[in-house]
Image (cartoon, rainbow, N blue to C red; front, side, top):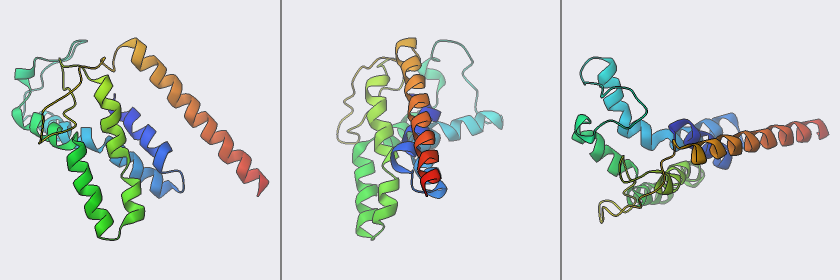
Length: 168
């Protein structure tokens, strides 16, 4: 799934109480991709990394530095998230912990929408590198329904909120 969609789903699923909650949930929704690809992207912008090119096809995996794969494995693991969530819960940050649920939602959505060809989702890492060979999110049969669903969810949320505000 594309990074923006992850944030939009997380925001609407877990951050509807306030703008601050929405932003927090949105950031946790995009976090796994930003934390794994962000350093490489930033390095490319600063000229420290070679950008693997643009095109319709994914770049060759040998053009992407190994640290990106390690960060991807770390940020796309249910086990790593479970440790993070448990720590927050143990520290008494229960309401904040609930706002972080966009992170496992991100992983859950990535499992069937990433193929084995380009960044399959190792959701059991570091115990296992098992992944599901999913259908690429950029294909029209995934991408277009995703956009329609997001537009529908946000249209419903917007009209529902306006209707509730008028009743008050």
